Length: 352
Image (cartoon, rainbow, N blue to C red; front, side):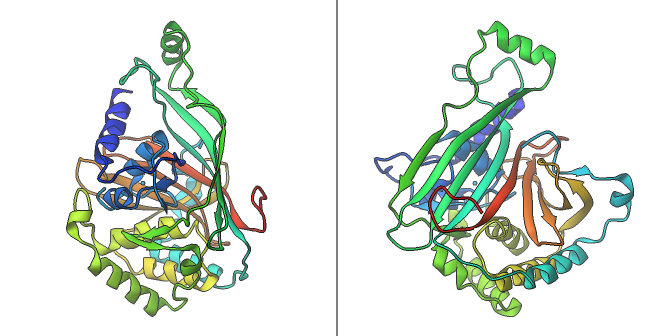
């Protein structure tokens, strides 16, 4: 429990402000542009879910390494669906190429809003104590609607369906002895935003419409990502500029839950398939009980951003099911996000 709080405290230190905040608070997915460049990792996701920061940049989740400047659940995303399936796991490249093939056959669609419903689990924050004498995790749901048209409002509904899970009966008893303080993070909140929100590839901002115009050709997409990577400044990344593999991995985690065309999605899987060091962990059950294949990338070191990040993919639909981060030396994930729903809708509040 102390280790969890220390990891979260590090995340908060990383997210030290470099710009003046705007007056209106925004939800955890909305980040100040420069802040988002400082860390796009599960560390970012951990701190971001705890802070209502001000910004004009939307981040679709976190990864195991990111710009210097981030997300339920009964089963870890790495839980094997069967021991037989784990033994017969395909290599990562084969899995990614299979997903690319599925993505290429997906229907092209569009609408007025891109909707994401995500359920995230992370360590709780005690309202009074920096290092509470108990260990517990908070799971809740966020719905976000990203407007496709410039000037149209976007919306985020946060802190829905909270659930607190204690590590043991003794941890729950310690919490009760403290007076059973509220660990839910607050009541559900709905906010509309008139600003144009952006997605990130590294530190580069893209509108929703610009994402739809990303190359559907593998070579052109790889060339674009390489150019964007080369333009990244080392000083904008913490703890240092990543490898190109980690950069593509971070891009995939962000964009595979976002509004990209079937051709771009297919090409992104193919670009990812050509990167070294990505491993397949075989068939697993995600936090919502769905079956997919877990892919993993390890970032060496012991500081923020280090550890193993995982993506769980449904190969038959090419859909990103879940993401998680496991810091070094931890058997259980620090952060988990399951993407319950993603898709186009024509009005705020609607679901696919």
